[in-house]
Structures are given as C-alpha cells and as structure tokens.
Length: 188
Image (cartoon, rainbow, N blue to C red; front, side):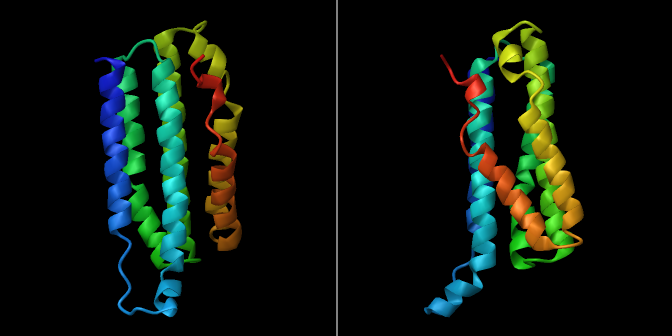
C-alpha cells in the first residue's frame, strides 16, 4: 500500500469522527440564551475534542508524509490509532452530558491516553519501517513530548476521582502544548 492511500483512509475516518461528534450536539428546544447556556458543557467538550482530532490529523499528516515505507506494522498501528480516535465522540458526549462527574471524565482521559499511546506505537512502526538512521527517526527521537502527554493523561484520569476541574484542565493543557504542529516532521 502506498502512503497516499493510508493517508486518504485516515483522513476519511477522522472526518467521519468529527461528523459524528457534531451530530451529537442537539438543537435547543427553546429560542433563548438560557437554552444555549444549558448546552455549554456539551459544547465545551466538543470544542476540546475537535481540537484533539485536529491535532491528531495534523501530526498524522506530517508523520505519514515523512514516512518512507508503509508496512503491515504501520497499517495495523494506524488502524489501532483510528480505533481509539473513533471512541472520542462517545467519551465526548458522555463527559459533556455528565460534566464534572468522575467516571465520564476518567473515561475521556482513558480514551485520550490510549489514543496517545496508539500514536506512539504508530510512530515506532513508521520509524522501524524507515530504519534507525532515517530522517524521521532522527526527527522524532525519543519523543519526550508524546510520552509526557501520555503520562499527563494518566495523572488526569486519577485526578478525575479527586477533582474534575483539575482533570479537565490537564486535558486542555495537553491540547495546548500540541496546538502548534509538530515541527520535527515538517517538510523541508
């Protein structure tokens, strides 16, 4: 399989995930500002999840562009990532509907944790396919930023049972450190 087919498939899946998320935003029953305020937890969760999906889409694009080969390991690792990303609409909706409750917040964090871990696995497979001295292997290195993100998700999951505000702040904070696209893989 060539890179463009893998990237096109991944782009399509992420587009469907975003579509599912937006369809979960329900139109208010009344036509006043109070009705919109009631939707604020759902909308806030949607915004955060949209940002996460945009980050994954952006960094995935750069990584696949920099890849030199697509192997079976890369294909399976990519599907593993897409599986966890496909659970974001469920976790987003549950957290939005039950804002500041421990189990939905922890579940959201668990999905982010697994997506982050799956992305790391995909990076490892892409680097393995390219070789240890490849441009992509040199650019990614040990990926401290990615590993720190996964560790922060784990901490946020634990915080969900102590203080959901802290947990939500960690989720938002990790997204903020990834908002700027990963320049290590930017095409030269």
